[in-house]
Image 1 (cartoon, rainbow, N blue to C red):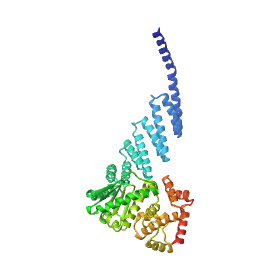
Image 2: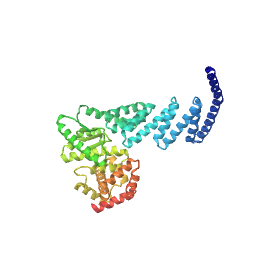
Image 3: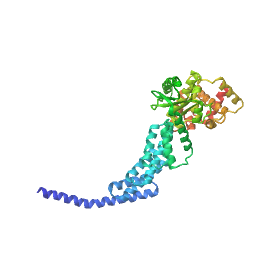
Image 4: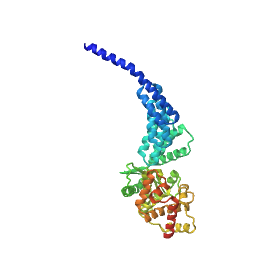
Length: 428
């Protein structure tokens, strides 16, 4: 009796399947057709909704599966054009999950991860950038731009060996990448110079130097930098966890490695390296503190804001935080400033960036530094240092310098510049 009842149940199920499966398939085809119509019309969100329903109704249908993958790929493109990399990656991953044999899908997904990593690197979010560059390479090892960006990230973090490694891989794919050959040659030269350097570490810093006679100097650097870590960390609410490397060079080595003239004896590299010359920092204790606080401020600003920070704001704050000279102008700085105020030859804000980077004219660069310092003095005098931090937060949030000035001080760059110049003439 039980067997007979079981047979009846099975027979009913078979009959129901015979009735409804074609109906499911028919509905799936209807949803697919509607989804394709939306796909052709460029409404990729609607297309994805209908095609997903079709796929759920008939998951074995290869045509529906391919159409759904195409709709996700189209959505990924759409979000990439808006630079919404998180959404582009989300839909790219969905497309790849449905069709992992499509090389273009993998390549497009790699591009989204690479672009997202670049965006995060600019914002100073090294950990996330590192993660996204690694994912980009998982999907495409033939894209040389990923290796260039990954190398740039390593360089900004002070990991010079890995920077060379990634840049060489980029050059193997595309031998004529602008500047990369030169960067590799320069770093290989620096690595060779530093091969025999001694090193000492203390919590958040590592100092590398040549010759045991500079051991005491290295110890001084570590003590000052450790103090700067907490003092400046409190000022900017930024306490990096990764170690910062400090290279102590002779003037000759420094010029060979950086290409900088001797009158620019200090350099910080992104968020991971400081280069100084022994001849400069050995002069006196005040000079040593000023140089180290100055360069470490650059490190913190890069970690806090990334590449979005305007050069005049970066250099102005680095000078302002020098413990011995930051809060006022020296006699030489006042004399230089007076000369150009009287001659009406001040460098405008829009031109300061190029003046810092060109470094062709020593007096122009000196003036650019003095101007940058006075801008911070002006901001603190007319507002407060808290308002400077607000300005940095606006930049970190993705605003450009004009938008950040408008949001913080309710002035556009031209109005801000006029207020600063007026203040300068009244004070100096």
